[in-house]
Length: 159
Image (tube, rainbow, N blue to C red; front, side):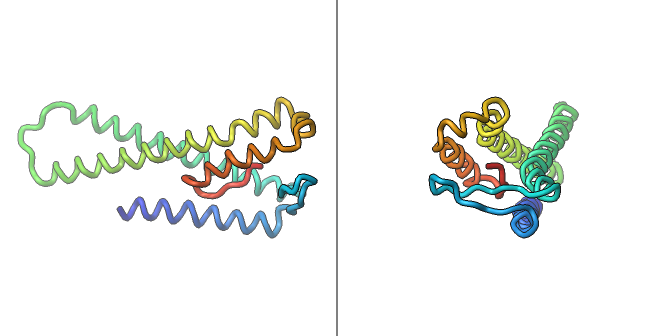
């Protein structure tokens, strides 16, 4: 429970810190003609901070979940042989491994959810950026998808 609380607190603290740094030094927010806000990064620092808010959480979540899942499977396969007798320590260790696997599953689902929510914007922006000019409300739809990501994941800026 302490590890989960620490992970949760750390992720939200880092997100808040990078958000404040981005707001102060990274760029400016402007209103588009369709009354939508848009963040424009300025300079190398702005692009670096926006990239940090986008990609660093992905890499951290993916790396942590993969590491925990690999470790849990290693433990599972080494302990697959039936134990001669169960004692309290084995039971406590089993519960600890089970909790770690649950945390890994949560991290992996968070990574997948974040990727699915951010992917449409990045694909459209890189493959067909002219769609944003042709369809002025398209950014609004992408922002709705990204807001859906915020319901489960710490804050990050992408659109």
